Length: 256
Image 1 (spheres, rainbow, N blue to C red):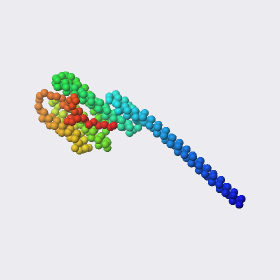
Image 2: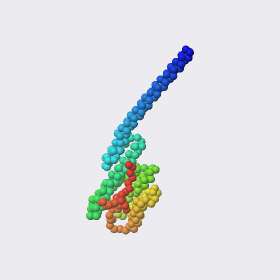
Image 3: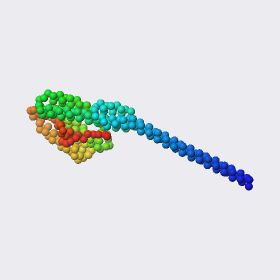
Image 4: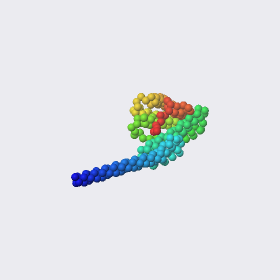
């Protein structure tokens, strides 16, 4: 019987040792998991902080930017951002700068139109239009930077529409007798509107704009070869009136 008790004791010791090792391993595994969770939580908090200090800060600046200087500040801060965020905010900056410049150009156009209504020989009309031309040229550089390579139909529609809008406004810089040049611009406007129509056929805003431009083309053709007063500069918006030809708002592209 003694040998049997020894065997039982040995087996018991072995089982106890096994259980002890298992318990230690289990406690150790729990500790490892808990530590991993702590590390993951710490990494998450650090990531949130980094996001707030980089992407979050740039987003706050972009949300409130309204001047060229403010948009330049936003652009300067995009360099340290991850690629996707950098591309996104760079596009927002270009749109913001375009908006700022176009607003200023249209304000100058309104002023020129009002001066013309009061006295069409006012020398300040030409000065204002020359200033508007410089602003318009700068605005053009930003719209050219906006990519049409996108799967988003809303973006592609708005971009083509906006390109048409900007080209239409450039008619204001032509002399009254430059009918061929005006018709060339109108043809370019119509080309962008057709591209917009391909993105979304029978879009009401696009169709209204196309109808408006078609009428302008007919008017321009009817003036060919006719001499006389140059008349009011083309494509000038009125104060408090619609900001686009034929309807309200220029349907400007946005990435917010």
